[in-house]
Image (cartoon, rainbow, N blue to C red; front, side, top):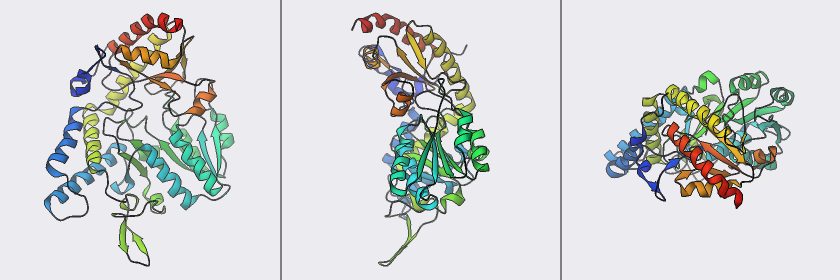
Length: 407
């Protein structure tokens, strides 16, 4: 059995020791570690280019513009979009979903229209729609999940009617790892005349993706979960929809012409990118895409499935462990609780052994409520993790549990 992808030397942070122990990082759903090519691409830009984009005819500006727009084209090809015009750079998934809620809401939604979500969304795919409902009288409906964390498909079809104008769902749950049957949902939505947005924060780094094959209308993801830098994200939208949506921020670079009387806006995608953009971050995202494409997304998905299966089997054999979210199809995420143990205490002790796991509600309090919990511990895997690290986690857990339970 392959125990690693032999990539660990590409991640300099893995040379760190945490409280005397080698770093074992199991929090890639929150943010991924960064490989050397990404770090070097960002450093190279700041060292040798560092000019403003779209604004100058001099060499540094032209170089910066070329690199920035090359990154946009890399995103286009990575997700299978039809045109770079359909790729809007944002600050991250949260910003992408807020942009969509504001702009799509203004262009397409009226009081009484329905936005359909699931009951296990990340707050970033819930709160913007709640804010929209308060502003515009939009109605929110929620698809329930079963005890495995899977959408109850019969309930989805019961909720889907002609009042539903948009369905916005996580492609993969950030808490439970559930991989939703999005192709089926998208086809059903389109038959009813509804549009679909996927929160791809947990899918873009882990699965092969083709937005045209999915026929999804909008897709959002973040660079920092894709081995890229923080501060950069993407909103993909079909060109004909984006062209009907108004910008939500005004300023430089998103205009065609400005007078004291009125403003005309730049064409796609620039009308949604007001101000100086995240140039170095976009270049870093482009380098991250180059990096994962060199490995191959199919290879990444297969390897992470191996990690998931191995960790699931080993963790479920630990006495007192209860897995939260046991869907048949999952991304590389495991949430769990342990009888008599608070997740925060567990994570603190694991950190003393150099093992990083996430605890809390994972920015999805409704998910916790659905399962009758306030917190879980969460493991989430990346391309640098190994089977041996999972063994280290299990042996450490077994040694720590008596201490935690006594506390």
